[in-house]
Amino acid sequence: VLVGFSKDSRLPAEFNITKALSKGGDHTLHVVVIRWSDGSYVEDQDHWWMAGIHRSVEILRRRAGVDLMDYRIQADANGSLSIVGDLRDSDTWKEKSTSIMARLYEDQQTSPNGGFQPGEQIIEESIQPDDREFRLAVTVKNPRLWSAEIPNLYTLTLSLVDDETGDTLQSESCRIGFRSVEISGGVLHVNNARITVCGINRHEHDPDHGKVISLERMKQDIEILKQNNFNAVRTCHYPNHSSFYRLCDYYGMYVCDEANIETHGIQPMGKLAHDWGWRNTFVSRIVRMVQRDRNHPSIIMWSLGNEAGRGKNLVIARRKVKDLDASRPIMYESGGAIIEGVGRTELTDIICPMYPDVEKTLNLGQRRDEDRPVILCEYSHAMGNSNGNIHLYWQAFWDEKLHRLQGGFIWDMIDQGLRKNDPNNGREFYAYGGDFGDTINDRQFCINGMFSPDRDPHPAVDEIKYLQQPAGFGSFVENEKRLAIDVSSDKVCEPLKLDIENRYSFQSLDFLQWEWSIVSDFSEDPLLVGSCNTTEKGRDLELEIDLGNFGASESEGKMKVNPAGGENIDSRANIFDR
Image (cartoon, rainbow, N blue to C red; front, side):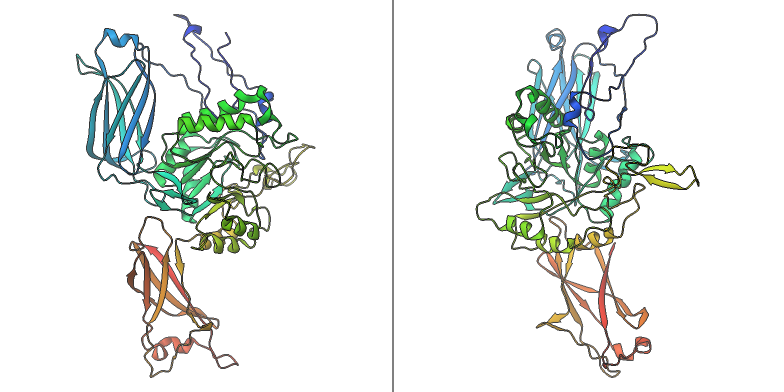
């Protein structure tokens, strides 16, 4: 018996198999993968096109009678919490007294695996459904807000309760975060604060399992991104495994959730987006992504897809998204850098070009005819010996005068190599296009990540970590002259003062421990080390470095005077989490 079929390879496909079952005997479930279909024309992303099933296959038993099928959560930074749920078989409601009990807990999640420390129950509300839908609107006073910097989460439970016996018939739960996303004054805000997107594009890839990504691999990806000062991920170019979003909620990572649409092989690129025959293909892929993922606080923007041009099908899809979720902006580039609008069309709330040079990026951030934020959906293509001049982008991103210029997403995170052994010498290597006897291929075009397939960092990672660091250092330069320090043996040096800019949007710098060291070109060992006194200057800090009687210290013996009679001394500060 044919139960159904689906053409979107990245979103869940759900089928009711009840009528295909019979009492007694065994049943066999066959899942057939058809490698190519008309759906392949809208899944033309630059990555491995692997046949097979990339997600789990499950059989779920739903309860008979009234069934809680879906629920939508909206938790805003002002503490307003709204819940809308859908029920199945509501006729049973009239025969039996049943209600929905909603509870909100202020517990603490202690591990990405779901471990938690119980907390106070702050809401308990009984809801009487109206036909096939139920609604609840309450306010939480002074909620702990969610952000990528401080990812506070609450636990919401919804229970179907028999009012006569008090028995719980069904329960659902999810982790929620109170936060708001809006664009005002041409700037993207989270919780009323401007953010800078230190982002990266991430394909789902494993060197041994292809597109099947384990939970441990997802955790590893988020952890190494956080360790290297990334705070945002674009799910290029399709919705990711649902567990990935739960981990982003927990660890604190902003997400641009992207629909499984790309048609860059079609000429012109927007041909299918204009064709009414493809309307349902475009609209359903985008709408179903929003319906699946909208309860995640980590998602702060939606993407209609990648390099699929412009057209009426995308206009309709955009309207549908806004009807479903008006709380998030839409970011959609559409044209692959050179055609179809370069990220400035009517389809996007955020100007999001692909690979503009630094000069064009600066111009976009200063245009007087624009009132939209500028966030590069792709930049600094990390293939081979690349990522050069990236410091010039970050000089612009951190420039307070360019307030509409708010960062971007590097292309991309992971080298998409597949582990293989050379049959001639047994040597293990990462294979790419042409290494499998394939004569039509893109060679190494998918080897363009900041990290190897096993997640080892490439050299450029150190550079981007430095550029994205959440503390900006001043310099010991006054009136364009490097500061001179008198190191005479009988001279007590005046303390040095260094301004530190707090680049966090929500967090202060008081949880950090500051240390300094002085190094010389003529010594491998530090000349002097010490800790810093700090003084708050608004959100920023002033560090005081006390060198004491520098010349009389043991460091003098480590110094070597250069022929010019001077000494090159560099100051550095290390940051340690307390």
